[in-house]
Amino acid sequence: YYYLTEQNKTYQDTLIDIKRYAEAEGIPYRHWLMDSWWYFKGDKNGVKNWTAMPSIFPDGIDYVYNRTLWPIVAHNRYWSANTDYAKQNGGDFDFCVEHDGSQMAVPLEQRFWDFLLSDAKKWGLHTYEQDWLYNEFEGLQCILESATLGRQWLLQMASGAAKNSLTIQYCMSWPRHVLQSTEFSSVTQARASDDYHPGNDQWRIGVTSIFAHAVGLVPTKDNFWSMEGEVGRYGNDTEPFPALQAVVSTLSSGPVAPSDMIGESDVKLILRSVRADGLILRPDRPAMVIEAAIKRSAAASNPKQDNKPLGDIQVAHSVVSGLPYMQVLAVESPSYNLSLMAMFQAGGYDDVTPAIVEAFLCFETSGQDPLRNFQELDRRSSSSSSSSLQLPAAPTKKDFSLWNVVPRIPSTSWVFLGEAVDKWVAVSGSRFSEIQANNEELSVVASGAPGEIVTAYARPADDLPVAKGRCEVPEAGAVKMIFDLDGGSSCGAI
Image (cartoon, rainbow, N blue to C red; front, top):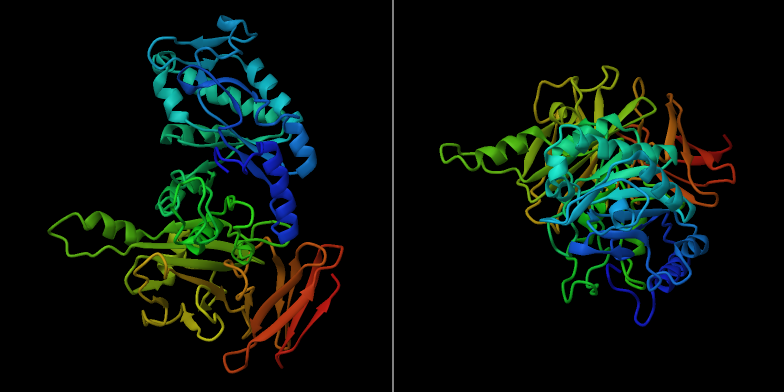
């Protein structure tokens, strides 16, 4: 619904209808993004007044918030030279206003941000998205000619958010903006992708995620359509790879943002990313491209080098109950042997893994039957084939390959496979904790929404069948799942 509502309806009506649809279909949205269509624009399409136009929300944004109870991520862009807030235009606040050239403006005092964001919090603002960052930076001579004004602008913005317990997402940022964010705890995420258009390659965020993660930001991918064949805002263009879009969004460790029209959601696909209450089953560290793929990409342009590109091979990491769990994504890549060392280096670890973990089990989550075929890796082996995941060729975006790599529990033969069949990230800290095993059984605490059914798997030993557990989460929000050597399971109170 980007600049496109339901037929003959306002955005107010459309959002309330989406809420009804989501509840009926069991789609557990927890936030929504209010993009650039909602506020007043002035000269050169900059922001004149950052309040809702009556034509968009006849009863105000707070009315929509109260009807949906969805916290809001609200977009903003550069300020127009005729913004209502500037003293030069009859407003109350100091601005640098430039009527020549870009016809932009920038606020100069902390009082402005305190007012703007405290007022927005009243109507449901949760995250302030500052878009068009580099445009405002390069478009104003007063910023370009000052050694401190650029920092002051971002500092006052972040301080205003912190005072109101809000977070900030950066968008269209230069590296200097991202680096500046290290001063501000309220800046929590940055767009790592380009804008979404059905079929484009904005899902390729494995390199930019390295930079974002290194400075403590969550990399975010733009929204996506979850169903092939959906048409709407973009003429006849459709999304050919919704599963890939969902996987990359989940492995980003940031928001997962389906943007389907009513009646066009692939609910089963969306639910592979989340718990029943909408909490994302994400990795601790986002998926990042492996070093070898970056080197091959650089060497591919050198005629003296005979290195074919590896495509997109990315690794995401989590630590659950002190044990390492990983996801490996391969897209448009040849067959490749990915070593344990390379997997851990991709996550920024100096050592391969804690010494207590000696072996790993790998299964293809994107396959038809993830539990049919396993690859076993042994970090003690001197053979590269025994300590490397043998990735099959994934020549197209349609046939991408996603693997979960899970450890054998130290001093036992148990391997906890987690939600190997139903979720992209089989073992996420958002779901599981307190993984314990002995010679007789394995137990794990599973968290979720009251009434949610959690289905998980564990393998007792190499020569024993996989055990399946199925437990309902009680009102307390967590249940103990217990697996035994005979392939049975039970559920217990915490």
